[in-house]
Image (tube, rainbow, N blue to C red; front, side, top):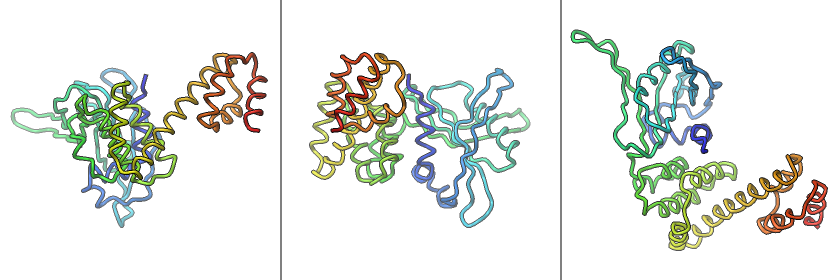
Length: 296
């Protein structure tokens, strides 16, 4: 099972400013780029259902050139929910009461279906009086055209195109374009891994789609193709590492973390060789011996 909330939280917390710049440029104009303080994860008890809910992402930021702070609340929603707008208001009221700061609420909808427009406000009114008209920012990925983001030099665009409105036949092309955009951004390896891992998670291709994907890569310029292939190779290496570690843990029991770290440093060719050799292992000592021999 994919932990959607954790994937999105990791993405948004590492590329928070880029997210605001892409979807809320008007906020980016008055937002001080640093410091951005992510507040400790908070639990909110829904008084109606009795459920304990987790507030996804809450950032304390400053107005540009001022010491005045406000909060940005981003709530990720991976499935449709009838009372979501009401829940957003409850979150807003709880956060505002708890912290005593203005709250800028954002809902990020990432589900594939339905594609109807999700609500972005919660009202309480009577025939003679309007009591409440609470509204929040709605970013609904399945209603956004991925082609509109191709020229955005922004890592969040490279990631979230994978969750936008995509025709089935376009899946390989979108994956190739996500990586092409990512390859031009010159991110450090850790940030590159977050984006590329996100794209690979949400755009897993079958064998036929993989052929189209490779053809799309072949249409790129030589430099772009080389950079994209490096990302693809890193996926292959990570996939091979995960498979070998699962096999070793099943065969030998939980591995010493130091041995696991040594395995993660092996090349793709060494991992292939280890995948064959481990069939003859009967103890952790066999693994240690093999690793010692492979490093000579």
